[in-house]
Image (cartoon, rainbow over all chains, first blue to last red; front, side, top):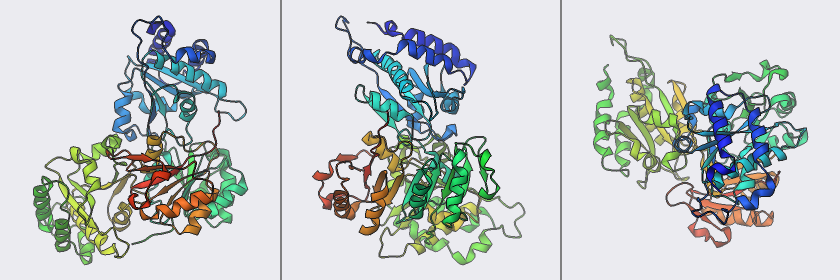
Length: 288
Length: 288
């Protein structure tokens, strides 16, 4: 089995051609991945074929935290790995949006192979087959000896899609996670507010939780960050009002991105709140 | 009033000479700061003296997150600012340890002015006069038109000493916070465990909390990170055991530093647990 023999040529060429066109053409990737990936082949893929005279050592899988949006918030380490790996994989939405790739677009070199991973981003459909397909495509590159960096907005292990790839491949391949700046902490920096002092407890929670759970968790947090607001904004605003937290709460969307918005909660129309918005409740403690 | 007239010459030369000697001589900085800093002068310092023909615009204050220990976990932005500002300030312990400076030692250039900020790091003594002194020294550099970067381990706004400087100076000077990789998320990466999925609530809490509060907060967290373990380790271990969380809990100290240790909790001697240790309890959720 040679490197070119397991479908990498098709992927490589296809993506090399596409990458100059910008970030919005992930659909082709799914078809490619469906063709190339087959979960039943995994035992075969995890070790070189017996007739290979000089087996290629497998590549390393990187979960690369690339931060909240500002390309300058990549770490030096993520930048080094991103610019040196032969293969870069990233989630793409069915709508064609490729946020993770857009963040690091200026760092990607033409000779790097790109692997878009189409994901449904919908609660109605199971994302399992999508992750299966993406993981197998990545596994083929790794088996062929190519290091693969999977781009992860924010931090890879905090509510990230990388974890589904991690859970499928970390047991089979050498894997390294490079932490990234989470949008939660970046939001505090953009808002310019100290988050937690000394004995404070900080809770990070998704607005998708049911109302009773959100209320209970917020009631005992010294500081809190409520992520994934979107269509849950009105529910969260009501809870904050009931708990007397509205005056401390700060709203920010798309932190550190060019279209970042910081707005008073009272001025927000719930219909206009994107998924990439969060509410931050800084600690009341203010020691000298 | 000229730049040289407000004590900056003394500071500049003094720190330029000192910086070649390595990182363990913060005491001198305090004496210098005590001599030069005087809180009563702040109104005068915050605007140029009336007879200055071409007043120098004040410098910008940066709170620079430099990450958990690995110098490669600085962001590109922190690296750019660190290597371009004329003045770098950092906390030093009375013991002489200067962790923040050690992390970025290779990036500091000889012509940069260094301002050590001695802090007591002791619950017995008030740190307020130390922060007052440090803030006034920084204010003098800012007033003289020099940008100042304050080094912050981890993220500047999360349990950081920078917040005490921020609260003293952000109202008087243009201030920018650059988020950094927190040791909390870096620990998950080093341990190689997904932290939170989908609807999970993550709580970050200091082990310094009283036993009842720790118990209550841990009981309702889907995932948790308990920081600042040190001499509170035995108390935390007992609580985790009571709550049935011990089998999920992971121990790490000095994450990403050269002397990082990952050890089983059962193997730990409470007397050997440093302040820079934490316990991570990853989510039990493991969706496909």
